[in-house]
Structures are given as structure tokens and as C-alpha cells.
Image (cartoon, rainbow, N blue to C red; front, top):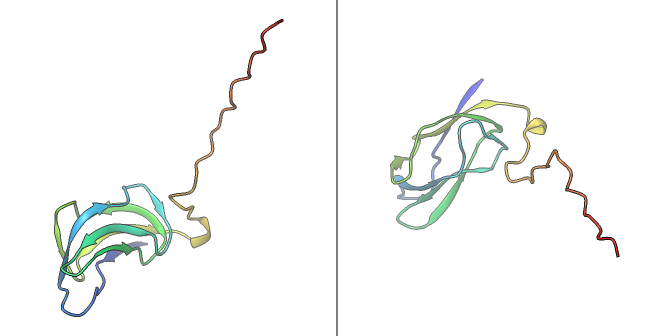
Amino acid sequence: MAIQVKLPELGDGIESGDVLQVLVQVGDVIRKDQGVVELETDKATVEVPSSHAGRVTEIHVQEGQTVPIGGPLVTIEAVAAESAPRRDAPRTEAHAEPAKSQAAP
């Protein structure tokens, strides 16, 4: 099921924010509450979290763009929360380190 993550209310009197950085890419599997964009408002710089876990299928904003409250940020395809790995988790390498050679005396 496709879910649009939209810019939530950020505070009294804030009607929009400027995208400083998009923190995800299409294909990323993200967890609920993981930051998807970094925004600057008149009052602060904030990281906007995802409302759901899932795989990013579309990004609706780009750096420098002004987004109104309620505007779409990304679309995700929902996945079970326990099957969504953390994007910032270290990746394991499939190959072993090369063996150290010992010099003969």
C-alpha cells in the first residue's frame, strides 16, 4: 500500500519550510520516525520524520524547494516495521579480509 509522507504542522504561524537536504533515496527502506528531509523554517531547522516504515518509491521535493504544510515529501510502500532495517545500520561485507603473509626469517 502506497503512503504519502506529508509535511506536518511545525508550530504556530509556520506555513511552510525550505528543503535543505533530502535524507533518503528511492529504494531506501526506512523505519517509522526516521528523518526523510531537513527543513528550514523562519524559526528553526528541523528534521522531518517518516510517519510509517517502508520502501521509498518516490521523492516529491528537492533541495531549495519551499513546501507548504500538508505538502507531500515522499511516497513509501509500507512494510512490516520489524522487517525494515535501519538505514544507518552498518552493512556487512560478504568477503573475508586477505590473509597476512609472514616473512620467512
